[in-house]
Length: 105
Image (cartoon, rainbow, N blue to C red):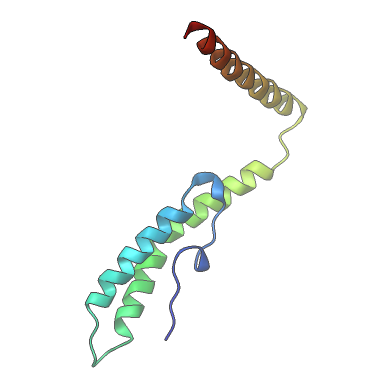
């Protein structure tokens, strides 16, 4: 019997940063399930892991999918203009503050 964990089971958009967290949680859940291994029912621990993993990760997969759809949806000219101006302003502030710090030191 083979089981999977992390992105091999539930690939997610990297924007939310949930992929690695889910992989760690899957590994922890699988190790806990393997502690309960029984030679009479060898597959039951894997089934237990997979059932719990699906329950836990479904919410994160749906959040990730929703975020990916929101990011790829057309936003219109005004929102695009506001986004681009905000990014340019943020970049300017970050560059200005780093240059300003050099002169203060």
